[in-house]
Amino acid sequence: MTIALIIIGIIIILIIFLYNHLVRLNIRCKNAWSQIDNQLKRRTDLIPNLVEVTKGYAKHESSVLVEVVNARNNAASMSELAKHSEEVSNSLKKLFALSESYPDLKANEVYINLQIELTGTEDKIAFARQFYNDTVQHYNTAIMMFPNSILANIMKYKEKEYFKVDDKERELVKVEF
Image (cartoon, rainbow, N blue to C red; front, side):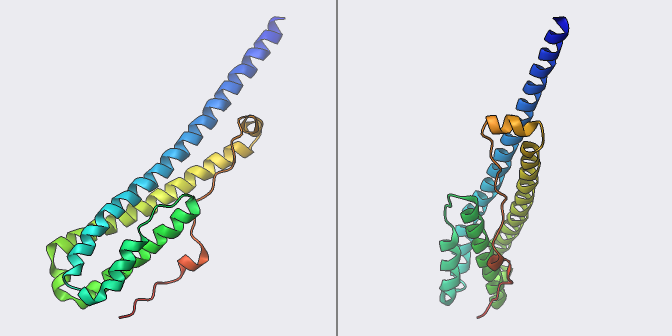
């Protein structure tokens, strides 16, 4: 009888441990996703300032500016967010390339500071994406491995989607004036 109680106690402790582990991984994935969202929001907040500074120098290049502003957009799914995020990144590359045509703009301290902030934000976004994908890999592996898979199925934990961009978005950006 005592051996049976000990075995039941060990099983209950194991289930609690596995449950808490899966919950922790799920929350970590949500946190990693919110970090991507935070950095994208930061970028979205910086873009209008960069566009305003650039407008004065590049009035006839308004199509690039409009492209940058229009690319800022809320997306519902990860794949939509990835697509819109890459559109904004590509538009920013065009905007930075545009500055090469305007020496006064390149020398403008506000523009330089905004460009540095945006470049830093792009690096943070890339890191946040990588961290999210690493976290998702760890979570997906955990819910597929035995005995976690049994508990994950009971709790209806599903495989999470990686943050990825489609092949079209990986092509080099062509900047033409």
